[in-house]
Image (cartoon, rainbow, N blue to C red; front, side, top):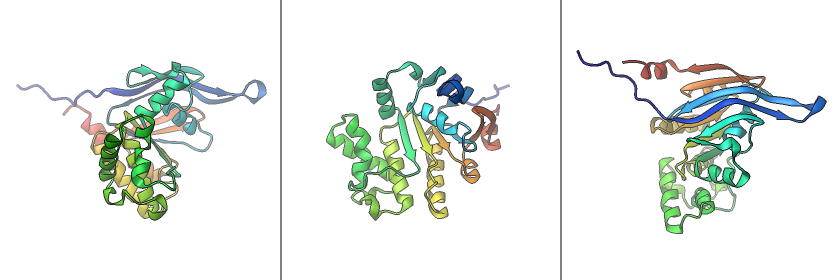
Length: 246
């Protein structure tokens, strides 16, 4: 009798252990996170939801190495980033993290190509290699033919696709998207969600912060955070089946 095949083991990209985040002191103290434990594996497509003040933005800042926890450990790609200084965190942000923002954060007077090249400029990549990688990233999001266009010449959906290309150009360990459809109409939102789905199928590791239920439902796993704690962690049935014994 042949052995029963099992789903392949996937590397853990990030691991949070007993994460607390406290701001202020005395009567003004705020416990933004109250003991978060979380693992996200390579290829996961995760949405994080929660009401205003729940701690989801604080969690996003920690995942993006924009802040360090008051207590606990954060391991990204095998490195404990919770103990790093600002210079080391900046290198992590440039090389291992790709950011996508609600407001796109494109430089207005620069072309789409130049905007996508920016992380490589900061990473001191040579000009020819920068151009090649940026054009490849724009091609991935279907905008290679808009490389010379400035942001004001592009629709909102196209601008966000340029921002996605910029996030991908360094081949990051983790893509972080903060309310990526918040400034888009329904048609452009659908366009961006299709793009995330394609990236997930390609094995990218994606974390999306959103307050929109229909955006979260496109992810393979949905975390709900409330009062600084993860109160629900739901994996989509199809994904759960794929990871079970066949």
